[in-house]
Length: 165
Image (cartoon, rainbow, N blue to C red):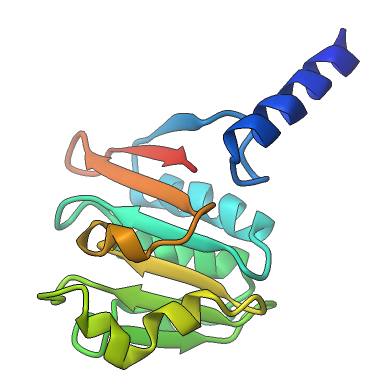
């Protein structure tokens, strides 16, 4: 029975072109505190591989930067304090077990602005992990398969985290 279930999951993954980290097309994870949100992100960060792209969406204050801190912790960034939103510079680079590109597209006015940054070249680097806040501002530029993280505010410290690819 267990063998059949695993085989069925592999078939599901291959048919829908899901990211290998996900065994179903989407899953929602409720959290009740910042610490819990960080733990969810850190667990996912430990599973990320070179070439992965993580696209984050959610309203202001939903925890996108906090989630990225957790991902970076899982990727081996020693000082989580150095992980900050690159709102004014669009990109920060961190050293972890895999180099990390952290983009923030909040101030992006037009998608074509990304061409001058070399955005597509950064995302196609198979030796890094790319993390993108406000990815919904340039959805046509996010490669497939990407992991999409949607954060929703459900209370003062609680969030609904939807993970899909």
